[in-house]
Structures are given as C-alpha cells and as structure tokens.
Length: 435
Image (cartoon, rainbow, N blue to C red; front, side, top):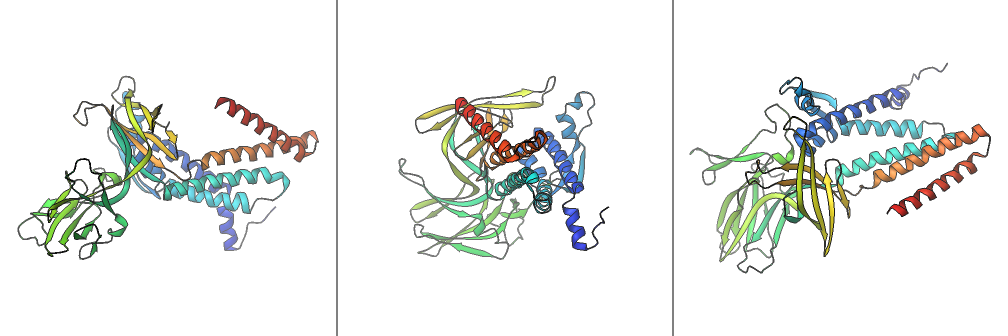
C-alpha cells in the first residue's frame, strides 16, 4: 500500500494532479454550461458568455430566467428569482484549473511508456484546446453588426474598445470620408485632474482629453458646480442592474471632457463627449467644421453581409423566443453566396465567425422593420479546437488499437499505425468527395 506524501509540495502536487480535482472541475464546467445556455434565451449570447464563461467568478444565477427557458413557467410561474453568488468559479477559473490538472497529471505525472503514448497525445490535444480558448479570450476581436432586412454592411463595432474619432466635415459630397482615431488605451487613465493633449499635422487644433470616466453620463448641473460645461457635468453611474448583477460592458457608456485649442489663435472650445450622445460634438476652427465623437471602435470585414430575411420561432403556447434565424447573402466583390445563420450555428469565412445574437420584429425599435443583430468574431485560434479534436481522436484510436493488438498478440506499432493510416486515408477521401 502506497503512503500518502508527507512533503507539503508533494501534497500540493498530488492534489493538483488528482482525479478528484478533475471531477470537480468538469462537473463545474457542465453546470455553468447548462446555466449559461439557459440564460442566453433572455440575456443574449454576449451577456451570458461574459457572466459564465469569461469570468473568474459568477456574480449570480437568474433562477427565474433558467426556469422560463426550460418552459416550466407553463406549469408554475415563479417570477423573477435571482441567487447572488460570488464564490462560484467561472469558466475562466475552471479552465485554468483544468489546464494545470491535465498538464501535471496527464503529461508530467503519467507513466511514460508505449502503452500510454495514445493517452499522452490525447491529453496534449486537450491542453492545446484550452490554450485556444485563452488565445481567443485575450486576442480575438469581438463586436456586433445590426442589420434591417434588405440592408448591407461590411463593418462591425467592437464590444469593448472605445475610440475618439475626429472627422472633418466635407463640403464636396464626392469626397472620401476619413477620420483620425485615438484608441482608449491612450486616455482611459485620465481621471479628474489629469489631462493629455493630442495633435496631428492635418488638424488646425490640438485636442486635450481630461476627466475620463469609464461608466458615466452627463447630468444637469446646479449653478454652484465648478466642473459644469454648458449646464452639464459628468456623473459616474452604477455598473449593476436592478437585481444587483454586473451589467455587460456594451450597455455602459463612457464620457470625458474635450478641449479644442486653435493652433493659431489659441482660442479654446470645451465640450462633453459621451458614448450615447445623439450626435457628435461639432467644433468650428477657421472656416472648417469638425465632428468629434466618442464611440466603439469599428472594424472592416473582408466581405459584406446583406440580411435577406429574419424570423423567430417561439416556444409552443408562449411568446418566448425559441430560435432566431437569419437568411443572409455574403458578398465578396462580385460574388454572392447565400448562407443561413441561426443560434449556435454561425457562418465562418476568411477568419471571421458570424453568430446570430439578437432579433427585433420591429416592435422594440418602433420601426415595424425586422432586424437581426450579429456577433462578429475574428479569432486567431478559430481552427485550433478542430485540430485538437482530430489529435484527440488520433490519440485515443492509437491507444485502443495498441490494446487490441496486444490482446490478439500481433505487433502493436505496425498494427496500430497501419490501421490509423488506412483510416485517415479513407476519411480524407470521403471529405474530398463531400466537398
């Protein structure tokens, strides 16, 4: 009988490599996947993804939303019930734990021999898949594209990246629109009392940004406030909704004070830039007018998307949406391709994935025109999970074939590798015929 390790480091290593930790982690991932999928019906893909899969800890579980997603409200309507939680690990934390457990237990600790080579390959592939998720989280570009039926666009707006855009008003209607862009990494540290000046050779003025607030809105000021501009000041707002849960970043607005200083005369103009403003701030310098706005960063797609038709399916006997579907046309130059986008079935092309995110039958916007909202993702590790799954399958197939070879008493390596090569060749031929 083996004795339990007495060295503290050995105990920690044994715990990190244990099957118990792996079981706990996988169970937690199963639970949050189930809950996140249910809440997606009411909160949308982005909010559910941020709360359950991209978070270190889950702030709450909306029991009422999950209950309604399961259509149990048809039997008993429990209303809005929210369970606040701050100690349940989120998807990011659980995947980090699983990565450490697999690395130490499935690669470092496992006995190295020809009998375990297939298992080691499979564990390595799973680690590669988890790494793909980390690369996606930290380096992928995500944004939204909203289209009305019949409309076309080749741009999407980032969920989280804010920019200040400076655009000169063109008097010639045929002139090409251009804008200078200042990324938020250059001014988001400018809290009250701090300022930074931005200049460009093409501009007749310098732009100073100060009093930046990440979550704010302009409020009407009383007469005794010294920080008011045109009767308004910037007030910070809560980042929680009525139920006490964190609001998604795209539902919160940033604001700051902008000061334009004429390079020639030194004359200054001051204004408030707010992300949800109805129109850009307009300044006049000399004979020219400029539009200055605070908005989400825009990205260009290598193709255009036209929304041809959108529809929703509802749960039987209810007004709750069950499925959103959009029929679109992907336009690349003169080439048009009909595609269908629906929940959990995105369209992938040229390094981008287009997911169905929201649906409006015209009542929400008041226009009477159906609209679809899409989540656009440019992910450098988009195909890594597919590669990982192939490697997992190869590793497990090698492991089982070598066990079979030993059972029937033939040469394990020749038997296993021969069958794997034959299987891969048949699979490649089948895929070639299908495609």
